[in-house]
Image (cartoon, rainbow, N blue to C red; front, top):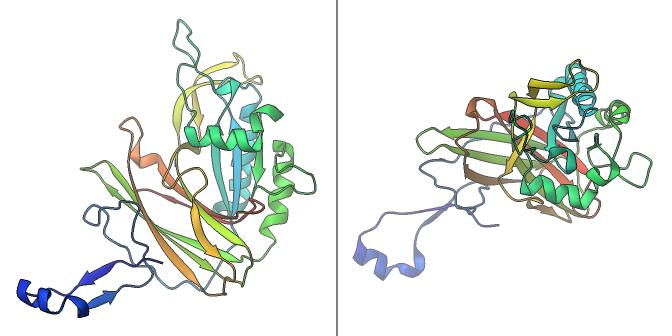
Length: 295
């Protein structure tokens, strides 16, 4: 693992003479890279945490012309109401029902699809299975596919929250207004010894996006001021993230990754959230999730 290094200040002549014995101070486990500007995004300190809680990722695959999709959003809201911060929701707009429409009144003209959501959709096959649907920690829950009807989300979450956490995630966000930049230091701590390989994915979502939505239970069914929640906007480290742990993984081991991205000017920074989760690369099952507001 690379480390951020601070080099002892010396005179140019001394630096030349002692070039093979330069003084390096190695900071605790920061991972250098990802093009993070340490001026815009200075490294953050993490407090010691002793109380660990299992947190569940619920991915809601949806679209603005999907008339049944508001029922899935309501289920996600109900789960948050029941479990609070133990449930992390990411709404992924994909497929036919997310395509923008060229209507005279500009309804459904927005395109909330992303390259990352599209790749996830292609891999897992959510749109092909018929929206609305989603995944709870990307686990099959007794079937062959991790894709679940929203009617099954509650029982799946009930089963997952009962499990002891095997990893924990801590996020230190920063927002640089001058550069319209979102920064995130993400620490992953493994609480149990694990085999296999694990990756860390870090996404950005936006809450309370007001725009059109089809709802078959509403009259009229076209709602111009629908509140879209937990909308996937972009990724800090790609669709599939990066390796955070490889077997043998010792209990108590940890690593910190640093990220920064430039935000779209059309996003409301006060409604943006950083969503991070760790998953097994062999099964794609998520073992822990976390979410925090950018500001």
